[in-house]
Image (cartoon, rainbow, N blue to C red; front, side, top):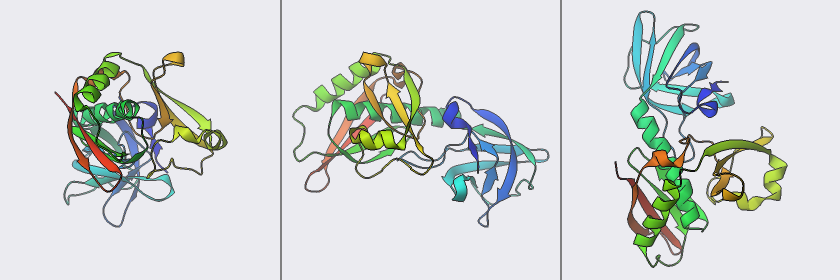
Length: 239
């Protein structure tokens, strides 16, 4: 098991750790990590791992068995020995852009209040697929409303509920294709705003900015038809 430091502090860029395993494929497992593993449409983090006498570039991060998080080297190179103390460092600019896009997509699901059938995140853009039989009437209005929500600079926070509470409030789950992970007895929720000024509340295991103002201005790109009742809406960071 790897302790996910990014879950408690998405702004943690560097941290010490200890190597607990090396996979058959050459992946590196640490006792704790700042690297987010691919999941929920968000790609795994990249960065660097260094130790006494060596260093290696990390291309991506994936999930392993028994809650292990596996750091995948960018190319074949000498690996740290088991039990070695290491320092892990994120490619922070990329991670922060992923956080901005991810948080903006939460708000896009507010502007377009329809079931989400899929999604994807990159460092420059993201997209959501909606159960939307017809194309929206005014793309410019969607963009304007989304940017107004971002400019409200809502606080983004997490909270936890029991799985039974989620079962009693199924409307919290907006995604039809991806369900929150179960088995631990509780579900992580991301809240944008607070109290009566809550803009969004939904299960999510990803990383997000602390305030929506960090997202900056976005623009709505293509809106494509994907299947009989699906529309794919692209969203881009402006800078």
